Image (cartoon, rainbow, N blue to C red):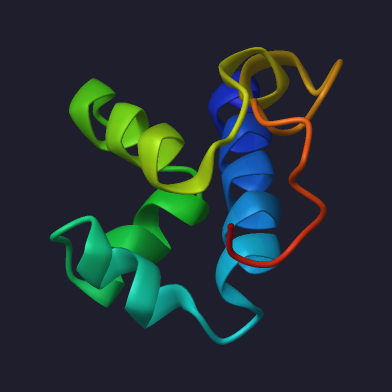
Length: 84
């Protein structure tokens, strides 16, 4: 559970950087999810593989960083916050 909570926190960091502090509804919509479902994921509920893969695709988040917190946060070297 602790690992999932850490991943959930990292997912929230990426979401806030890409969509802003109030962008939860926008991002959830782009993932085809309700705002409440995404809140649960950011709160520590296990994120299904297809959702996390789509999240990575939408945000350019680096899977290794999501898992460990080490290395580059984004796959693209040109990403510096905000939407690409």
